[in-house]
Image (cartoon, rainbow, N blue to C red; front, top):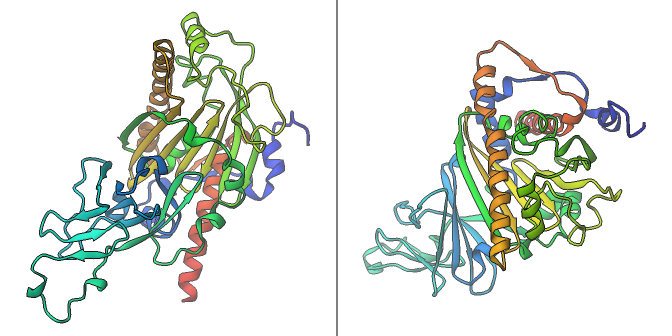
Length: 407
């Protein structure tokens, strides 16, 4: 196989096949419900950064609509980050009142108190105070009424939770070689962030697919990033259920005058060539001069991208068969001067526009597929990450069904 092969990824990963992909899984209500149970309720899911709960007593509440719950991620006085269902053990009231998809707070005493009847819990989830406790009966035991714990582990500053009663793997084993590949980037050093979210009328996989290839850049991004990126991927690697690749620049393209000025004053745009001082040796192993950023996916719904001085995420949270919550977060080094701030704001306007260009296709795609007029989609070789995603999902679903039949 040569680098110029038009089917290089199919040749490298023949187990994924080359045939059309059925679209039924994107519009079937039954399939969606099984995905929630067999994938999202059993996989490790990214819900917070350690910096968001940096101090003892600080907490974040993340809503997980697909599971009809929200999770409290809290750092205890012992420094440990733990996760709990956001539900009081008394009569099921929401323990922390949510103000949106993400809610933040801090308790100096590292406790949580239910505003309904005042039950108080420690950061370890233990029930430590019950008003008028003497009025309860002898069968009531505080130690049996702790918060409902959720399995919580941390990798590279990313806080993951698993909703399963007993996860099949710990987080380290779940990430495997993907964790090694992406783990040594200095994520915490780039804390200045821009955050976007919206609800899209499409299946979560359709949203995933729109960000998982560069085939679309010359058409969809002709306005924001004209002739900036190559449509071909580089260094595609599959790590079990996870996947990664490099997106590369078109080195012959000259930036527009305003963009060139912004790139001079601050590293906030992916369209400018960056260095490699932050990149682990696992990233861009061939040392390509045109390397722009690493595009990776941690199964099932976390897109993690890294570049010199920039990292960003996309997450696609299923809400129903045809609705998805998209969250985009972009991280750079905090500006030190007004010139740097202006440069970063310019970069974010371009990035926001590009993400809007990406999301505009998703609802139309779902609506068209839902008509039933087309049963399959055909993927070309550079859409290998999409093909791998459907392959892994089918594997996980089939394995879950086989286990159920054996029981």
